[in-house]
Length: 140
Image (tube, rainbow, N blue to C red; front, side, top):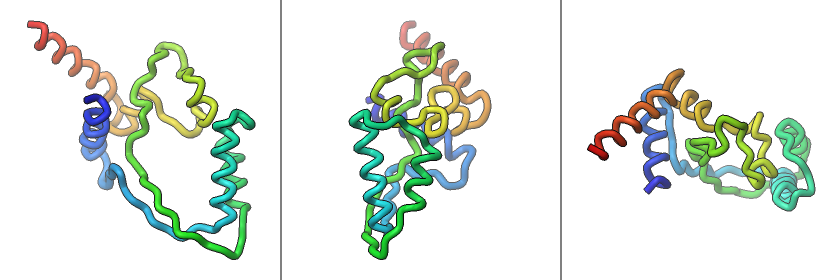
């Protein structure tokens, strides 16, 4: 249930603050084959632990890759990244696999930061308050 509820909730909150909000949005584009190869290489190296995430360096590698060939790619862009809460709170997010593939300081909003970015300052606290109200209502 949470896998369906959280993206729907995020969409509703984001639509209150932003004019364009998409979930599971298909993007089809022509992309330089050299860039595709660099992206694949970066992803594989990150997953295998052969490199550390560095968002700026990765972007530079992708932007400098060039060839004369293009290939159509299809991706699904989504409003929602599954870091809607930090199970390590009040400490920093520490899931080993996620930290291995993402530069969490540059590429992710986690927990309070994500909700406040979607809905504006105070959204996270308001959500927690609503959750507490529902819990109290259910237990009465």
